[in-house]
Amino acid sequence: MMGHIHTRIKFGFMAFFAAALFVMMPQTSFAQETVGADVPPTAASEEVVAGETEAPEASGAYVPMAPTEGKGMPTATEDDMWASMTFQDQYTEDGAYALWMHDKILLPVITVISVFVLFLLLWVIVKYNRRSNPVPSKTTHNTLIEVVWTIVPVIILVVIAVPSITLLARQYETPPEDAVTIKATGYQWYWGYTYPDHGDVEIISNMLSDADAIANGEPAKLAVDNRMVVPAGVPLRIQTTAADVIHAFSVPSLWFKMDAVPGRLNEKLLTIEEPGLYYGQCSELCGARHGYMPIAVEALPMEEFEAWVLEQGGSLPGAEEVAEAAAEEETAEEPAA
Ligand SMILES: [Cu+2]
Image (cartoon, rainbow, N blue to C red; front, top):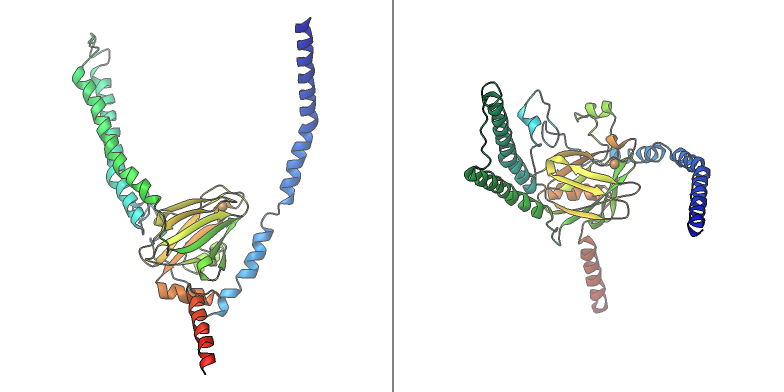
């Protein structure tokens, strides 16, 4: 009797659940359609482009740096086969270390192991097939070989682990107190760069069309209208966040890649060794125009960077305190006079 009631309750619940699913299904798919239809493709970003591109022309001093062929950008395979097998040339200490680890440790280890295993396979195929070795050996143990094939991989792993953990630790190094803070915000589909230490200057950076990029002597799909200008040779505190969906701020030649997550502020130290123009791209699938939100970092000597900041309507850190101190001095002098 009890069992019967249970079955009925169970059946009733399942029927209700199925009915609810059936009723809800068309609505959910409908809801998704409306959400999708509500998002205009690029209307918002296009407005920003139109608004922003007019500004820089007016001021004179800052001239966008021309790119150096092969620096801070991918290299063509036909020019240099080796270049396409490794990373881009690196312009940070961590990048140089990582490149060294990849070229001098990982690639040789991978190559030696692959060749060795291939050799063993070929040897077994040729020497121990049924025709050339009709009476197989019945050996089941060989202590020496067993010790060797345990110890050697351990040694290889230790050899890889030491630089690997070193690199990991170096990448987590906290920016020093006096690092220059720059915040990169990912939008669908462009980047915004804010300079909180420099009077909250904000730069909106959109991709140039292929024709404009090539006319500028820049690589197509990597050139932007307004670059992220930074000082070279000093520690930078790069913060990333996003306004809509997850993006990722990534510049291969600077060994820099960090997710830009809405509602979160990620932070990483970046010290660019020398002035230059370094290209990158959003590296998190973020929607229809994910492939069209490149990053161009222009590193300048400190004085040129400061001139650029002033040209953008920003201020220099400490400038306010100097002004305040001057004002205080004046007020202090007044009663005496
Ligand atoms: Cu993105």
